[in-house]
Length: 243
Length: 229
Image (cartoon, rainbow over all chains, first blue to last red; front, side, top):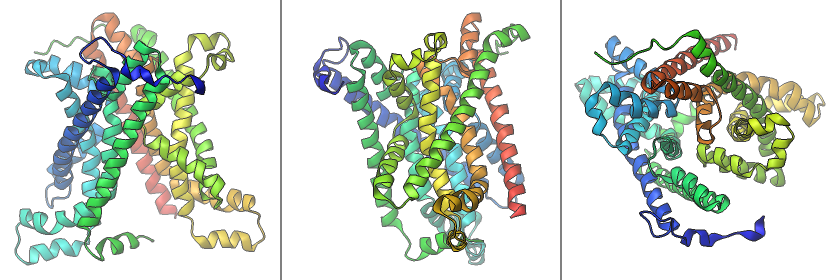
């Protein structure tokens, strides 16, 4: 099998929008990156909001709402959620019919991931010593102020490692967009495989692009982690496990 | 009002379309969990062996699997598993190619994830336990089997079960190769009756109820285990 590689397949003309397969593949990579990054923004914003309201003092209804959100989006498979956004919501909410499937996938992936990020934000906030909260209150901060200036800056630093793996997950999960015909990498892989019968070459190239993306994210996040580290703090937080 | 019409659902329709898929999803989850835990434990032991020639290939396998999207892994296996393999299964091999390919894929894929859980579980056992085992003269195998692994399994049981729930959700991705799972059941039924909206909605409800109750049980189990310890 190894002797009959045919990498020239990427120079062939797929007979559509793109002159060659490799140009189509690069465009597909672009779609993968944009779906993932936009979904990441949606997930970070929603996940932070939901995570924060689950830690607010004296607000049982908000906490319940936050919990319900997390359970809802965590217990339905991503592919089913994508189908919900693509088939069900436009049928129930007619204005959604004009929204392109690219946006629907971004929303689906973003909402799906927001539940996980909400969980991480909550546990990050709750991992902080209670004294931090009291200290903020003691200097006369409002709830908004002590979240903004005391709790969140610390909590976000704590959760950078799980956020890193969640970000990498978004990139991997964006592959599910193939199911609603967004022309991202996996969709490209399936179509190019079918058209050229050069599955191994096509899949290898696509897999390599996924690995490169994941690796780049990993490096970027660890750079951010180093830059934002509070000397001494993270170490003591992670060493404090045990019993 | 919304134009939803669930009236076409009756027991016969459900059992014709959905039950077959449900059965496959459950079987896939169970087989992949058992196989994944088995090979995952082997991988974890390789990684913790302290021998470079065992550790390195296991690390490459685990990290490789974990950096590729599951859909791509499903496509890879579907492409690469040779026809001669399917013929081992006789007539089943020709009729259920996607399903057989899915089972192999999920065992191979989940082994990587389970091995990381195993590794964390084994490493959570205090060094003193290992020393104690060695002190009473146990071999490496005895120590692992009688001292370390039983405790490690117990420590990681909640995480293991949570991973199994995720695995159950992930089985829906066999859609990529057209295997007939729970989601495909709803999908086919909706298309057959021209009621895709209701069908997907029902699929979401069913998945939610299943996964929510399972994760609720895992939470309870976690509490129970935590109290004993």
